[in-house]
Image: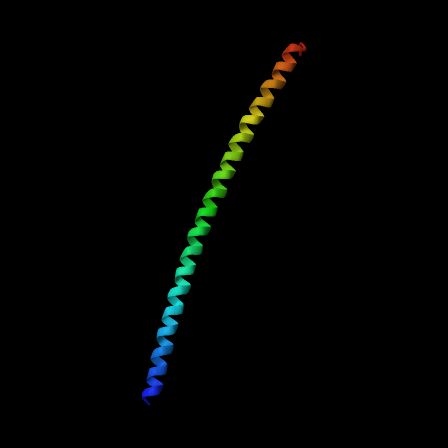
Amino acid sequence: MQSDKDTKLLISNMLKNVMTEISSIKDGQEATIQKILKEVKDASQDSAERAHFLSRYIDEEIAKVNSKSGK
């Protein structure tokens, strides 16, 4: 009878430890995901900004060429 109680207690403690470990891993993964999402958002914003400036530069250069050729 005592052996059964000890076994149940041992299994219960092991399950608690496993659940704590799983929770810890999950929290770590969520933090990593949030960090990656922020980096992707920042990179996307930077790329959009660069594309905007490149487009303006190209438009300015085309306008210069057109004004030199008399168009």
